[in-house]
Image 1 (tube, rainbow, N blue to C red):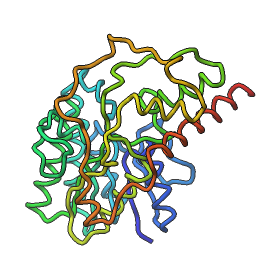
Image 2 (image 1 turned 180 degrees about the vertical axis):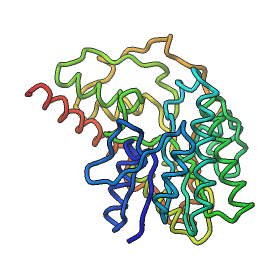
Image 3 (image 1 turned 30 degrees about the horizontal axis):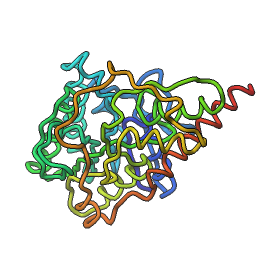
Image 4 (image 1 turned 120 degrees about the vertical axis):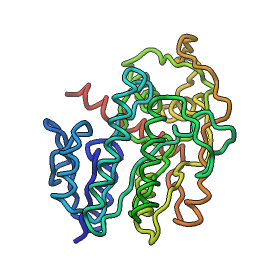
Length: 314
């Protein structure tokens, strides 16, 4: 039975990846911090991004066939509060895990990167060869981690790959992320639990896809004979306004009656839209999103409707 070790198993991506790997017959082991719990029935080992020896011990103890490094502080705005800490947790932890993987024969490594590495890109859509010009401490840290993957792959022949994943969502996404905030608000307004939704720039563009599809891409990357880096995205840019329209359509409400724009929340517009070019993933992995944008938003809103309704009835 193949064994997979997952950092970040308690997060959105970890949940879907664990589900898929178990369905494929893998033994799944999760790296968790003290006080955290993995999904039921999952064996765990202790490890913390800020404690390199614990990460190394987790890899050596588990000796996995596949190592998926998903854990990171993922809320980009928060990275401005502690740039040095963000760099250590993202890039430092990646370097530690890659070095530990070198000591386990045959381990293949997937590191979750981000479309944030492109930042102020001069082209749209962006592909694997687009120059990286990050605009946040989080993006800088992800570029450094990306560099570690490439360097150790080239120097030591490590089967290590970076997944340059753009925004990916699901009902398991925390509410501080925009799509879940919008889905939750649409459900709450429908149930009479909320009066309005306050947002910033309705014209801002993002590339959204379902987390379930993205983690399937992670798995396909480690199935390849040769490691490599791939952009995983929907390949389509959509505005915040389109996101809002899709969410409110699920509950048959007109968003104009409930959505208010707060100019204080409007950020400077990007020079080029952050949209991923998935040509390489499509051609080499046979991968592309299986869930449409509309189906993803429908799933999220309906999950929040059920959750809020259950809370009301409790």
